Length: 125
Image (cartoon, rainbow, N blue to C red; front, side, top):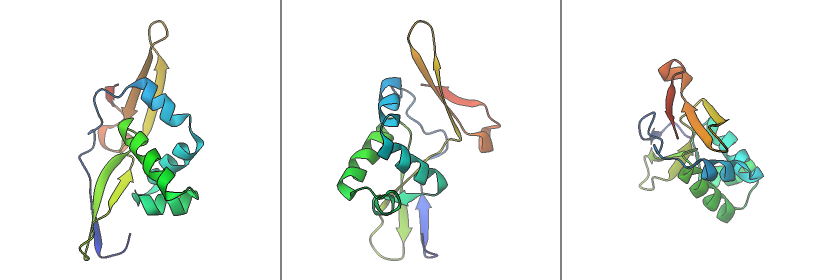
């Protein structure tokens, strides 16, 4: 991101309160999705930056970004720049993702933002 740009995202804890554990697990089972998620954890990236950083075709990156956003693993924002084009960019807004087996074979998903909430869960999904 250059010095004449600003990023705007939804607030911390804006995860979909009904993230489906099956969708989360499916997204995390894909190597490209995990690489994109890791890259977006370091800093907010546009789709093109994800493609360049992860060496994944741009068309594939768009599909993976949609899947990761649907799973509440990425948050979409806008990079406000001096130019008129304001690309979408993606970042994580959690420090820890916990997957646990609940009663029976149910899987529970929990996002945590240690830096802002002292490590308390942002909600079970």
